[in-house]
Image 1 (cartoon, rainbow, N blue to C red):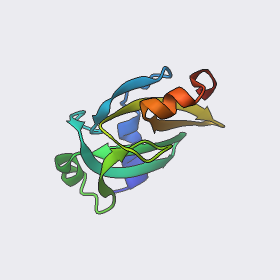
Image 2: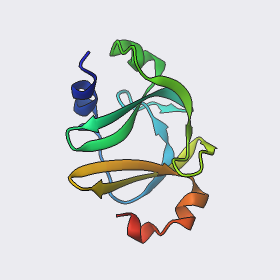
Image 3: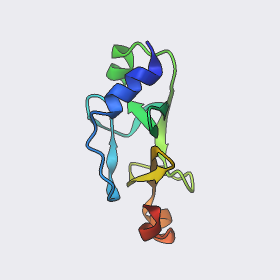
Image 4: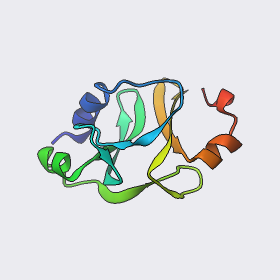
Length: 113
């Protein structure tokens, strides 16, 4: 599998919202809500974002890479089932970060974009 091209193809199907969205985590492909997933990272094609797969989609894509773990806040590292999913621009790239409520409230949401 060409990981970057496959991950990019999946990410391009997402309905990306520039407004922060508080929700759980979903499988990148089948969109099932998850508490633990295979974590991959896409840094290609104008995106910098984690890409999560459930066990079935991890097998479907035949990936031998990725780390199976629970979700965490990108700022404080707290284990989370729901976070703010935040998309922002970094140069020419769209970047996604995940913040718990506390870290989101401490940040200046108006400056995230």
